[in-house]
Length: 420
Image 1 (cartoon, rainbow, N blue to C red):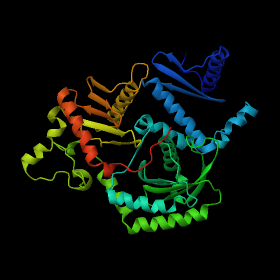
Image 2: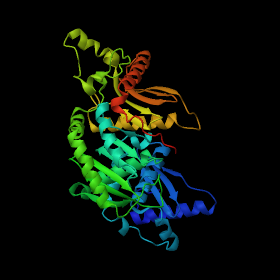
Image 3: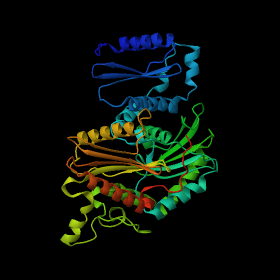
Protein backbone atom coordinates (compact mmCIF):
# COMPACT_ATOMS: atom_id res chain seq x y z
CA UNK A 1 0.00 0.00 0.00
CA UNK A 2 1.39 3.43 -0.94
CA UNK A 3 1.15 5.56 2.19
CA UNK A 4 1.55 8.82 0.20
CA UNK A 5 -1.76 8.32 -1.60
CA UNK A 6 -4.02 11.40 -1.51
CA UNK A 7 -6.54 11.46 1.35
CA UNK A 8 -9.55 11.16 -0.97
CA UNK A 9 -7.99 8.21 -2.79
CA UNK A 10 -7.21 6.62 0.55
CA UNK A 11 -10.83 6.99 1.62
CA UNK A 12 -11.98 5.25 -1.55
CA UNK A 13 -9.39 2.51 -1.01
CA UNK A 14 -10.60 1.91 2.57
CA UNK A 15 -14.22 1.68 1.40
CA UNK A 16 -13.18 -0.77 -1.30
CA UNK A 17 -11.27 -2.96 1.17
CA UNK A 18 -14.13 -2.96 3.69
CA UNK A 19 -16.75 -3.73 1.01
CA UNK A 20 -14.62 -6.52 -0.47
CA UNK A 21 -14.15 -8.22 2.90
CA UNK A 22 -17.77 -7.78 4.02
CA UNK A 23 -19.06 -9.14 0.71
CA UNK A 24 -17.17 -12.30 1.62
CA UNK A 25 -19.07 -12.50 4.90
CA UNK A 26 -16.15 -11.39 7.07
CA UNK A 27 -15.04 -8.26 8.93
CA UNK A 28 -11.74 -6.50 8.40
CA UNK A 29 -9.71 -5.58 11.47
CA UNK A 30 -6.10 -4.94 10.50
CA UNK A 31 -3.85 -4.50 7.47
CA UNK A 32 -0.05 -4.36 7.80
CA UNK A 33 1.94 -2.32 5.29
CA UNK A 34 5.63 -2.33 6.14
CA UNK A 35 6.05 -0.55 9.46
CA UNK A 36 2.49 0.75 9.31
CA UNK A 37 -0.65 -0.76 10.77
CA UNK A 38 -4.02 0.17 9.27
CA UNK A 39 -6.70 -0.59 11.86
CA UNK A 40 -10.40 -0.60 10.95
CA UNK A 41 -13.41 -0.17 13.21
CA UNK A 42 -16.86 -0.50 11.65
CA UNK A 43 -19.75 0.97 13.65
CA UNK A 44 -22.83 0.44 11.53
CA UNK A 45 -22.62 2.92 8.66
CA UNK A 46 -19.62 4.71 10.23
CA UNK A 47 -16.12 3.48 9.31
CA UNK A 48 -13.15 4.55 11.44
CA UNK A 49 -9.60 3.97 10.21
CA UNK A 50 -6.28 4.49 11.97
CA UNK A 51 -2.84 4.47 10.30
CA UNK A 52 -0.08 3.96 12.85
CA UNK A 53 3.67 3.38 12.85
CA UNK A 54 4.01 3.50 16.66
CA UNK A 55 4.07 -0.29 17.12
CA UNK A 56 1.18 -0.03 19.56
CA UNK A 57 -0.84 -3.23 20.12
CA UNK A 58 -3.84 -3.76 17.86
CA UNK A 59 -6.18 -3.73 20.87
CA UNK A 60 -4.87 -0.33 21.97
CA UNK A 61 -5.35 1.22 18.53
CA UNK A 62 -8.82 -0.27 18.23
CA UNK A 63 -9.67 1.11 21.68
CA UNK A 64 -8.54 4.56 20.55
CA UNK A 65 -10.83 4.39 17.52
CA UNK A 66 -13.65 3.36 19.85
CA UNK A 67 -13.03 6.48 21.96
CA UNK A 68 -13.00 8.70 18.85
CA UNK A 69 -16.35 7.18 17.89
CA UNK A 70 -17.55 7.79 21.45
CA UNK A 71 -16.47 11.44 21.23
CA UNK A 72 -18.48 11.75 18.02
CA UNK A 73 -21.52 10.25 19.75
CA UNK A 74 -21.11 12.64 22.68
CA UNK A 75 -21.68 15.48 20.23
CA UNK A 76 -24.24 13.87 17.90
CA UNK A 77 -25.70 10.75 19.62
CA UNK A 78 -25.97 7.39 17.87
CA UNK A 79 -29.11 8.56 16.08
CA UNK A 80 -26.76 10.02 13.45
CA UNK A 81 -26.68 6.44 12.08
CA UNK A 82 -30.25 6.91 10.85
CA UNK A 83 -29.12 9.80 8.66
CA UNK A 84 -26.61 7.50 6.93
CA UNK A 85 -29.19 4.74 6.59
CA UNK A 86 -31.59 7.15 4.85
CA UNK A 87 -28.87 8.75 2.73
CA UNK A 88 -25.52 6.95 2.29
CA UNK A 89 -24.04 10.21 0.94
CA UNK A 90 -24.97 12.14 4.08
CA UNK A 91 -22.17 14.50 5.17
CA UNK A 92 -21.95 14.97 8.94
CA UNK A 93 -19.08 17.48 8.70
CA UNK A 94 -21.37 20.50 9.29
CA UNK A 95 -22.73 18.86 12.45
CA UNK A 96 -19.17 18.53 13.79
CA UNK A 97 -18.19 22.08 12.83
CA UNK A 98 -15.91 23.74 15.38
CA UNK A 99 -14.99 20.50 17.13
CA UNK A 100 -11.56 19.95 15.55
CA UNK A 101 -9.92 20.97 18.82
CA UNK A 102 -11.97 18.40 20.74
CA UNK A 103 -10.81 15.51 18.57
CA UNK A 104 -7.21 16.80 18.40
CA UNK A 105 -7.09 16.97 22.19
CA UNK A 106 -8.44 13.42 22.50
CA UNK A 107 -5.92 12.07 19.99
CA UNK A 108 -3.10 13.86 21.81
CA UNK A 109 -4.18 12.19 25.07
CA UNK A 110 -3.50 8.80 23.46
CA UNK A 111 0.19 9.53 24.10
CA UNK A 112 0.06 10.53 27.77
CA UNK A 113 -3.17 9.68 29.59
CA UNK A 114 -3.23 6.23 31.32
CA UNK A 115 -7.02 6.49 31.58
CA UNK A 116 -7.13 5.62 27.87
CA UNK A 117 -6.03 2.00 28.35
CA UNK A 118 -6.84 1.55 32.04
CA UNK A 119 -10.52 2.51 31.64
CA UNK A 120 -10.33 4.23 35.01
CA UNK A 121 -10.27 7.81 36.27
CA UNK A 122 -7.86 9.58 38.58
CA UNK A 123 -8.58 11.90 41.50
CA UNK A 124 -6.84 15.04 42.65
CA UNK A 125 -4.99 14.28 45.93
CA UNK A 126 -6.87 15.96 48.78
CA UNK A 127 -7.29 15.62 52.51
CA UNK A 128 -10.19 13.30 53.30
CA UNK A 129 -12.17 16.06 55.09
CA UNK A 130 -11.79 18.39 52.08
CA UNK A 131 -13.09 15.80 49.63
CA UNK A 132 -15.95 14.95 52.00
CA UNK A 133 -16.93 18.63 52.15
CA UNK A 134 -17.01 18.82 48.34
CA UNK A 135 -19.02 15.61 48.11
CA UNK A 136 -21.54 16.75 50.70
CA UNK A 137 -22.53 19.90 48.82
CA UNK A 138 -22.75 17.99 45.52
CA UNK A 139 -24.94 15.40 47.23
CA UNK A 140 -27.32 18.17 48.28
CA UNK A 141 -28.24 18.88 44.66
CA UNK A 142 -28.19 15.28 43.39
CA UNK A 143 -31.72 14.07 42.89
CA UNK A 144 -33.20 17.57 42.56
CA UNK A 145 -33.24 17.16 38.81
CA UNK A 146 -29.47 16.62 38.75
CA UNK A 147 -28.42 13.22 37.39
CA UNK A 148 -24.67 13.68 37.98
CA UNK A 149 -22.68 16.41 39.71
CA UNK A 150 -18.96 16.40 38.94
CA UNK A 151 -16.29 18.72 40.30
CA UNK A 152 -13.02 18.45 38.36
CA UNK A 153 -9.62 20.10 38.21
CA UNK A 154 -8.26 19.68 34.70
CA UNK A 155 -8.60 15.93 33.99
CA UNK A 156 -8.67 14.92 37.67
CA UNK A 157 -11.81 14.34 39.70
CA UNK A 158 -12.29 16.29 42.92
CA UNK A 159 -15.69 14.77 43.69
CA UNK A 160 -18.44 12.93 41.85
CA UNK A 161 -22.01 12.28 42.94
CA UNK A 162 -24.76 10.50 41.03
CA UNK A 163 -28.47 10.26 41.60
CA UNK A 164 -29.73 6.99 43.06
CA UNK A 165 -28.93 3.95 40.87
CA UNK A 166 -27.09 6.12 38.32
CA UNK A 167 -23.46 5.32 37.52
CA UNK A 168 -21.00 7.00 35.20
CA UNK A 169 -18.53 4.98 33.14
CA UNK A 170 -14.87 6.14 33.28
CA UNK A 171 -14.76 6.39 29.47
CA UNK A 172 -17.73 8.77 29.53
CA UNK A 173 -15.95 10.87 32.15
CA UNK A 174 -12.84 10.95 29.95
CA UNK A 175 -14.81 12.06 26.88
CA UNK A 176 -16.84 14.60 28.84
CA UNK A 177 -13.82 16.23 30.49
CA UNK A 178 -11.99 16.30 27.15
CA UNK A 179 -15.00 17.99 25.53
CA UNK A 180 -15.15 20.64 28.26
CA UNK A 181 -11.41 21.36 28.53
CA UNK A 182 -10.84 21.59 24.76
CA UNK A 183 -13.83 23.87 24.06
CA UNK A 184 -12.88 27.49 24.67
CA UNK A 185 -16.50 28.59 24.92
CA UNK A 186 -16.90 26.81 28.27
CA UNK A 187 -14.13 28.94 29.78
CA UNK A 188 -15.61 32.29 28.89
CA UNK A 189 -19.13 31.92 30.32
CA UNK A 190 -21.47 29.50 32.02
CA UNK A 191 -22.84 27.10 29.43
CA UNK A 192 -25.76 24.74 28.94
CA UNK A 193 -25.10 22.22 26.21
CA UNK A 194 -26.71 18.99 24.95
CA UNK A 195 -24.32 16.05 25.25
CA UNK A 196 -24.59 12.30 24.90
CA UNK A 197 -22.82 9.84 27.20
CA UNK A 198 -22.21 6.81 24.94
CA UNK A 199 -21.85 4.29 27.77
CA UNK A 200 -24.85 5.67 29.65
CA UNK A 201 -27.28 5.99 26.73
CA UNK A 202 -25.90 6.33 23.19
CA UNK A 203 -29.29 7.23 21.70
CA UNK A 204 -30.29 10.20 23.86
CA UNK A 205 -29.04 13.63 24.85
CA UNK A 206 -28.47 14.79 28.39
CA UNK A 207 -27.89 18.45 29.17
CA UNK A 208 -24.69 19.67 30.76
CA UNK A 209 -24.41 22.85 32.77
CA UNK A 210 -20.72 23.80 32.85
CA UNK A 211 -19.08 26.58 34.81
CA UNK A 212 -15.41 27.25 35.55
CA UNK A 213 -14.92 28.20 39.21
CA UNK A 214 -11.30 29.19 38.58
CA UNK A 215 -8.75 28.76 35.81
CA UNK A 216 -8.45 24.96 36.30
CA UNK A 217 -11.50 23.90 38.33
CA UNK A 218 -14.92 23.42 36.77
CA UNK A 219 -18.32 22.10 37.76
CA UNK A 220 -20.48 19.91 35.53
CA UNK A 221 -24.14 19.32 36.37
CA UNK A 222 -25.93 16.80 34.13
CA UNK A 223 -29.69 16.61 33.78
CA UNK A 224 -32.32 15.05 31.51
CA UNK A 225 -34.31 18.30 31.37
CA UNK A 226 -33.71 20.72 28.49
CA UNK A 227 -35.16 23.69 30.42
CA UNK A 228 -33.21 23.28 33.68
CA UNK A 229 -30.63 26.02 33.04
CA UNK A 230 -31.83 28.44 35.72
CA UNK A 231 -32.34 25.69 38.28
CA UNK A 232 -28.80 24.42 37.68
CA UNK A 233 -27.49 27.98 37.83
CA UNK A 234 -29.03 28.31 41.31
CA UNK A 235 -27.47 24.96 42.27
CA UNK A 236 -24.06 26.16 41.05
CA UNK A 237 -24.29 29.39 43.06
CA UNK A 238 -25.11 27.41 46.20
CA UNK A 239 -22.29 24.91 45.53
CA UNK A 240 -19.76 27.66 44.81
CA UNK A 241 -20.59 29.53 48.02
CA UNK A 242 -20.05 26.40 50.12
CA UNK A 243 -16.81 25.50 48.32
CA UNK A 244 -15.42 28.97 48.94
CA UNK A 245 -16.56 29.10 52.57
CA UNK A 246 -15.09 25.65 53.34
CA UNK A 247 -11.80 26.50 51.53
CA UNK A 248 -12.23 23.56 49.14
CA UNK A 249 -11.22 25.63 46.11
CA UNK A 250 -8.07 26.94 47.78
CA UNK A 251 -7.14 23.38 48.81
CA UNK A 252 -7.68 22.24 45.23
CA UNK A 253 -5.29 24.90 43.96
CA UNK A 254 -2.74 23.99 46.63
CA UNK A 255 -2.90 20.35 45.60
CA UNK A 256 -2.36 21.31 41.96
CA UNK A 257 0.81 23.17 42.93
CA UNK A 258 2.10 20.42 45.24
CA UNK A 259 1.53 17.61 42.75
CA UNK A 260 0.74 14.02 43.66
CA UNK A 261 2.80 11.08 44.86
CA UNK A 262 6.57 11.12 44.29
CA UNK A 263 8.68 7.98 44.31
CA UNK A 264 11.27 9.85 46.40
CA UNK A 265 8.69 9.94 49.20
CA UNK A 266 8.15 6.18 49.34
CA UNK A 267 8.53 5.21 53.02
CA UNK A 268 11.31 2.70 53.65
CA UNK A 269 9.03 0.52 55.76
CA UNK A 270 5.41 1.54 55.22
CA UNK A 271 2.96 0.45 57.86
CA UNK A 272 -0.73 1.26 58.34
CA UNK A 273 -1.11 4.78 59.69
CA UNK A 274 -4.83 5.29 60.13
CA UNK A 275 -5.84 8.93 60.09
CA UNK A 276 -2.43 10.32 59.12
CA UNK A 277 -1.26 11.89 55.89
CA UNK A 278 1.53 10.72 53.65
CA UNK A 279 4.78 12.72 53.82
CA UNK A 280 4.11 14.53 50.55
CA UNK A 281 0.35 14.85 50.50
CA UNK A 282 -0.08 16.36 53.92
CA UNK A 283 3.33 17.07 55.45
CA UNK A 284 6.80 18.23 54.40
CA UNK A 285 8.45 15.78 52.03
CA UNK A 286 11.11 14.69 54.55
CA UNK A 287 10.11 14.83 58.20
CA UNK A 288 13.65 14.45 59.52
CA UNK A 289 16.56 16.84 59.30
CA UNK A 290 19.25 14.26 60.03
CA UNK A 291 21.46 12.88 57.21
CA UNK A 292 20.69 9.38 58.44
CA UNK A 293 16.96 10.01 58.16
CA UNK A 294 17.42 11.48 54.69
CA UNK A 295 19.27 8.37 53.52
CA UNK A 296 16.68 6.10 55.13
CA UNK A 297 13.93 7.85 53.18
CA UNK A 298 15.52 6.54 50.00
CA UNK A 299 15.95 2.94 51.09
CA UNK A 300 12.51 2.05 49.77
CA UNK A 301 13.29 3.02 46.17
CA UNK A 302 16.09 0.51 45.74
CA UNK A 303 19.14 2.78 45.92
CA UNK A 304 20.93 3.52 42.62
CA UNK A 305 18.87 0.90 40.75
CA UNK A 306 15.57 2.18 42.10
CA UNK A 307 11.95 2.87 41.35
CA UNK A 308 11.35 5.52 38.69
CA UNK A 309 7.57 5.55 38.31
CA UNK A 310 4.40 3.57 39.05
CA UNK A 311 0.68 3.35 38.23
CA UNK A 312 -1.74 1.73 40.68
CA UNK A 313 -5.30 0.90 39.60
CA UNK A 314 -8.03 0.01 42.08
CA UNK A 315 -10.19 -2.57 40.32
CA UNK A 316 -13.21 -2.11 42.60
CA UNK A 317 -13.22 1.69 42.40
CA UNK A 318 -12.24 1.97 38.70
CA UNK A 319 -9.75 4.63 39.80
CA UNK A 320 -6.00 4.89 39.40
CA UNK A 321 -3.13 6.90 40.81
CA UNK A 322 0.23 7.45 39.14
CA UNK A 323 3.37 8.96 40.60
CA UNK A 324 4.66 12.27 39.31
CA UNK A 325 7.40 12.13 36.72
CA UNK A 326 10.86 12.89 38.07
CA UNK A 327 14.48 12.26 37.15
CA UNK A 328 15.49 10.51 34.95
CA UNK A 329 12.10 10.61 33.17
CA UNK A 330 12.11 14.36 32.69
CA UNK A 331 11.46 15.03 29.01
CA UNK A 332 8.16 14.58 27.20
CA UNK A 333 9.89 12.11 24.86
CA UNK A 334 10.98 9.91 27.79
CA UNK A 335 7.53 10.13 29.36
CA UNK A 336 5.86 9.16 26.09
CA UNK A 337 8.22 6.18 25.74
CA UNK A 338 7.32 4.98 29.22
CA UNK A 339 3.62 5.44 28.46
CA UNK A 340 4.01 3.19 25.39
CA UNK A 341 5.84 0.61 27.51
CA UNK A 342 2.99 0.58 30.06
CA UNK A 343 0.47 0.34 27.22
CA UNK A 344 2.15 -2.76 25.79
CA UNK A 345 2.51 -4.29 29.25
CA UNK A 346 -1.18 -3.74 29.95
CA UNK A 347 -2.15 -5.31 26.61
CA UNK A 348 0.10 -8.30 27.31
CA UNK A 349 -1.31 -8.79 30.81
CA UNK A 350 -4.89 -8.76 29.51
CA UNK A 351 -4.37 -10.78 26.33
CA UNK A 352 -6.99 -13.51 26.72
CA UNK A 353 -5.39 -15.67 24.03
CA UNK A 354 -2.23 -16.18 26.12
CA UNK A 355 -3.37 -15.22 29.62
CA UNK A 356 -4.48 -13.36 31.49
CA UNK A 357 -1.31 -13.14 33.60
CA UNK A 358 -0.90 -12.32 37.28
CA UNK A 359 2.69 -11.04 37.17
CA UNK A 360 5.27 -10.03 34.61
CA UNK A 361 8.90 -8.98 34.95
CA UNK A 362 10.62 -7.48 31.92
CA UNK A 363 14.10 -6.05 31.50
CA UNK A 364 15.45 -4.14 28.48
CA UNK A 365 17.93 -1.31 27.86
CA UNK A 366 15.40 1.31 29.05
CA UNK A 367 13.70 -0.14 32.13
CA UNK A 368 12.88 -2.97 34.37
CA UNK A 369 9.09 -3.24 34.16
CA UNK A 370 7.11 -5.13 36.76
CA UNK A 371 3.36 -5.73 36.67
CA UNK A 372 1.26 -7.33 39.36
CA UNK A 373 -2.47 -8.02 38.97
CA UNK A 374 -4.70 -9.24 41.81
CA UNK A 375 -8.46 -9.30 42.30
CA UNK A 376 -8.21 -5.92 44.06
CA UNK A 377 -5.62 -3.92 42.14
CA UNK A 378 -3.17 -3.68 39.24
CA UNK A 379 0.33 -2.26 39.72
CA UNK A 380 2.63 -1.18 36.90
CA UNK A 381 6.11 -0.07 37.95
CA UNK A 382 9.22 1.09 36.09
CA UNK A 383 12.71 0.71 37.56
CA UNK A 384 16.26 1.48 36.58
CA UNK A 385 17.33 -1.18 34.01
CA UNK A 386 19.97 -2.42 36.47
CA UNK A 387 17.45 -2.95 39.27
CA UNK A 388 17.67 -6.21 41.18
CA UNK A 389 14.56 -8.36 40.78
CA UNK A 390 14.22 -9.15 44.49
CA UNK A 391 14.57 -5.46 45.39
CA UNK A 392 12.00 -4.50 42.73
CA UNK A 393 9.48 -6.98 44.12
CA UNK A 394 10.05 -5.73 47.67
CA UNK A 395 9.64 -2.15 46.50
CA UNK A 396 6.36 -2.96 44.76
CA UNK A 397 5.04 -4.38 48.02
CA UNK A 398 6.03 -1.13 49.71
CA UNK A 399 4.26 0.91 47.04
CA UNK A 400 1.05 -1.09 47.55
CA UNK A 401 1.22 -0.55 51.30
CA UNK A 402 1.91 3.16 50.80
CA UNK A 403 -1.12 3.52 48.51
CA UNK A 404 -3.24 1.70 51.09
CA UNK A 405 -2.01 4.03 53.83
CA UNK A 406 -3.03 7.18 51.95
CA UNK A 407 -6.07 5.89 50.03
CA UNK A 408 -8.34 8.41 51.79
CA UNK A 409 -6.37 11.18 50.11
CA UNK A 410 -5.86 9.80 46.61
CA UNK A 411 -9.12 7.95 45.91
CA UNK A 412 -12.77 8.90 45.97
CA UNK A 413 -13.91 6.28 48.46
CA UNK A 414 -17.55 5.26 48.56
CA UNK A 415 -17.89 5.74 44.81
CA UNK A 416 -20.12 3.11 43.24
CA UNK A 417 -18.34 0.40 41.26
CA UNK A 418 -19.21 0.40 37.57
CA UNK A 419 -21.24 -2.40 36.03
CA UNK A 420 -20.05 -2.66 32.43
